[in-house]
Length: 485
Image (cartoon, rainbow, N blue to C red):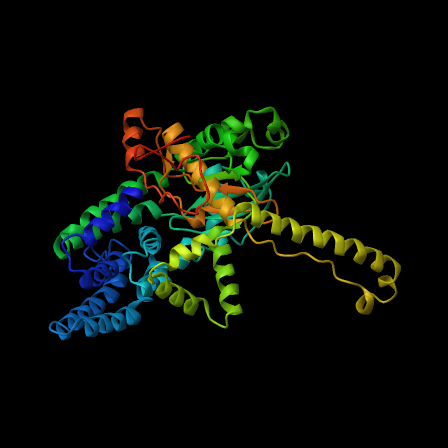
């Protein structure tokens, strides 16, 4: 994914006038998100017809706008293309939601690049970083039973029909194994791999004609996506993360979802589970190419928590989230504003002290509430009983940022590996304990040889010496290099 992002930026920022970069990017976005339309509709079950129904009018509209403002001043050009983006902003998302697969992954990547993506499309596609509409449970049940070779109730004591989330090629369900272990089950959609390969070839074909520069971006997506279809490979990556990364940071609350593979089921702690599973599964594990059973990690994604905090803060100012983002985006362009905000940022210690104060006040208040309820509240529960306090604890943002710096710095510089699909939707934060869980390691790259890691040391970004960002062991300037301290 990191290679993909660099390819995308290079394609849309090279040899282009500044005012036309995002306009060109928007045209390519429409083609990449809803594009794939040169295959035969008969062979792709109507996918081509769906994309062409959106691609053709969007392209025609784009060309009309370009012609109308061909000689207009800068302000008129910007106004015209802003109107164009507003008209078509939701169209890529609509088609992506219908076709799923490759299109979802493309939308997720593009949504994570606000520096080159017009804001109208970014706001629309942000939803893809958390979840997309799920497949019916009957489909999920059939896949799990076919892959495991047995009925669902032979392995699971319970299996939630509603998914925790859905993504580009599969979805995740909460479940409980027959020994009581709480797990999540990742299930790959049927036909996901077939449609991916068809979509990627048709999109490459259309861009060879329409915009050859963008073919490199599509090929980056193709390379990054290949290993995501094999959950056996993802289980091996998770096992590597659990054994190599977690011990270093377990004391700081970092967790990885450990797979129930053959290695896990062979341990003494799984003896009771082996006793209640079919013999074949007890030997081979609960991992196949299309089904992955993992230990459940507590918490919510950073993207969901961030969205809630954003809405709450905007509401206090009498604004919508979109209005607040627009205002802050404009203010961020003012000289010195970003530096001022960072200089006034609370430290990790200050935030943790505030969290401790909230918890302490809750305990103190609830102690007296309990006495009141025992002495008086029982006389008339509806009128006299007091509700116990449970304050919402804000996440310790500075501590989380520092921890993520350290974890990923260790992965890259000490172990020579990195997760190429790390975004806010793949980081879980337990708001009670403060634990951080890193999920979705289907694109773990490495271990890299030392000669490949060494150049990265000299290419790493380094904050300014006076930066108020939290200190990290992996952001130390030594002769213009960033090295582990």
